[in-house]
Amino acid sequence: MNKYIALLLILSALMPLGIDVAKVHAATSKPDLIVASNKPYDLRTQALENVLKRYNSPLTYHAAAYIKTADKYGMDWKLLPSIAGLESTFGKRQMPGSYNSYGWGGGRIYFESVEHGIDTVLFGLKNRYVARGATTVETIAPIYSESPTWAPRVRLFMKQFEAEYDKLSKQHLALSI
Figure 1 (cartoon, rainbow, N blue to C red):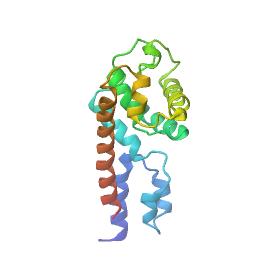
Figure 2: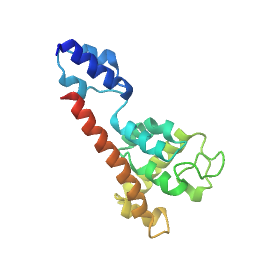
Figure 3: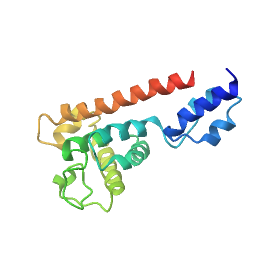
Figure 4: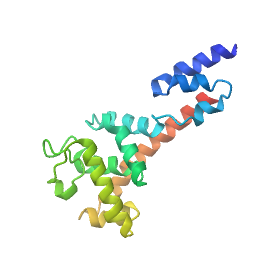
């Protein structure tokens, strides 16, 4: 197969993933850069979007904000969306206009926007939980919620995001080979 036809096939497969075609084109002399490129839209975002879409979540369109903010605070990218899954059925059941999908402050705190809620809660988790030694879902759970089933249910959602990420990673790897 002609290498240009192969490149076009790869590019057409990558475009729906939001990869910057100009960066890929610039890297055609080094095909390994397609996978290693520092693209603004990564597979974690796609994994979040895919799972959130399955739940018809209004948070689907904020997947990139979850990733960006989790990275900003050095937090697990799956944690906050998983908490939203448990606390508000991924944003479908919360106080109207509160943008509080996390039950933060008993669910009575109102945020200015979804992004403001994401930033505030991740900041709080980092500085009020993790900084004080609550570094796992299991050690966060008794502080965050009185429910003894909170941690296993949050872990269940985290596993769904991780499984979707693993699936996308395998597909992406297959495309790059």
